[in-house]
Image (tube, rainbow, N blue to C red):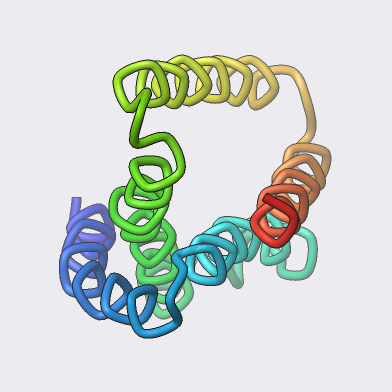
Length: 138
């Protein structure tokens, strides 16, 4: 409960500053890449640290803040870039985002049930690198 609240609170607190950062840079892409990196840090933490280390309050709250930053970029900067890139077909673009998000969640659920935590972490890091890199070639 409490750690989930930290995710939501940090996402809410970071949304406006991250949005301003994207506007100041003239593009949301680097901020969206930063959000992908935030999600990738979860995988990196799983690969580097033990369950005991990650299970303490400080690590849990720290990772919740990082997740909140990733969530803020997803809900704000990423969706802003989709609206900018597909302004003539926004409805179709956001439908595509929703379908991809659902597929990713389904895949995550299935992989989490059948793979080891290290394997899932490796998939998360790979997806994070792919997502971040794609922002610079889009």
